[in-house]
Image (tube, rainbow, N blue to C red; front, side):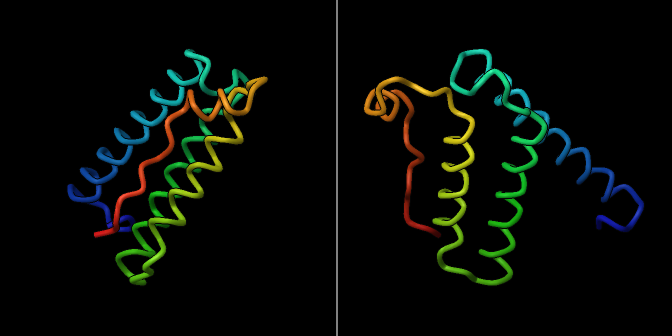
Length: 106
């Protein structure tokens, strides 16, 4: 529906914009609380997070890629790690930030 004007496309676009706004707010909160670096480009971070979710959906549903979820979690962890506030003690850093939970795929 992305290329078809009409009420279905409009509803989908509103839903996606709301989700992106929620991600933007969460990233902003992570910057404010010091979990992410102050110089984090919020829009780029959200774009990449959203891209990971779209790629995951595509690879899982259309391509039936069994490792898609694993790859998505690895990509998300890498994205978070590159924007996280550096800590002087790597062990304390790992302990202070919860790891993404890896549960079996559906």
